[in-house]
Image 1 (cartoon, rainbow, N blue to C red):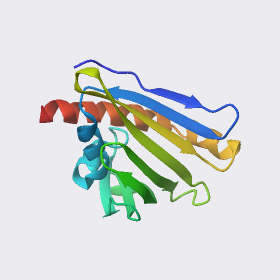
Image 2: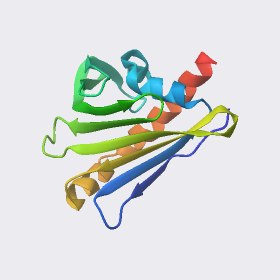
Image 3: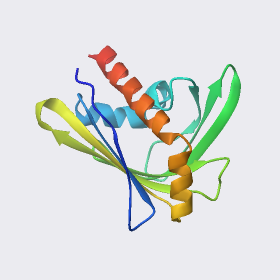
Amino acid sequence: MTKHETEIVAGEKAPTIEIIREFDAAPERIFRAHIDPELYAQWVGPRSVSTRIIRWDARTGGEWAFANDRDGKELASFFGSFHEVRPNERIVWTFTYEGQPDGVALETLTFEELERGRTRLKVLSVVQDFETRDAMLASGMDVGVNEGFDKLDDLIAKES
């Protein structure tokens, strides 16, 4: 399996963050890892935390919530709504950190099929203003994104 780099790009003209990453697995597998709560909890976030699913209804109109724990203590919790779930193609959801309830991101995830059974995942996060976007970038989100995707690679390798 190839080690893929994650690209995180801040929009210049709009308060957006785009995350692009390729995976050595078909779109169905990467999509499933995003909607199956047991799988999602295994890979999302940095290696230093565990993820505990609180609510998970992965369908158009559903809702979700999870918490990150370390040594049995809750560090952070997140919640949102599934606005659109289009199997193996697209997820549109809101993403909110409980500590910043006014900083809601609208995220669109697309799962692009590549040659040799691979997938390009694109995540576009849109927030209300540049200040919110910059605070997200400064929060260390890149560590959680990069380590989480590395854990997803490990999960894919185990399933193969």
